[in-house]
Amino acid sequence: MAHPKRKTSKSKKRMRRSHHALQSLVITDCSYCGEMMVSHRVCSNCGHYKGRSILRTTEETE
Image (cartoon, rainbow, N blue to C red; front, side, top):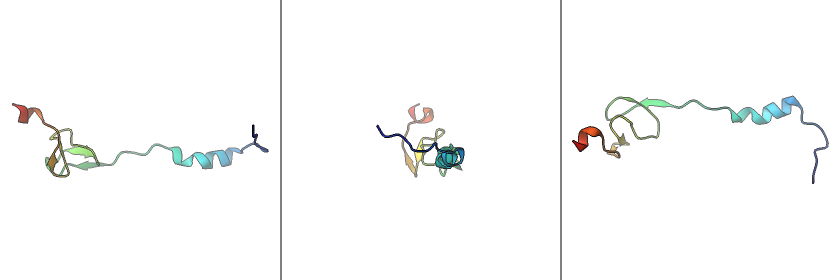
């Protein structure tokens, strides 16, 4: 098996891991109902995504 010739320094290790941090979610308002929602997801309040009804809500089923 291959073994590293030198120990990886703390600096090099941390530079490599700099892209591993978690990113915050982008929150926007729904264009249909105006509620806050996560981008590129179906609105949990009205069930619309990009102007189309994707999920049935309790109001529609009754």
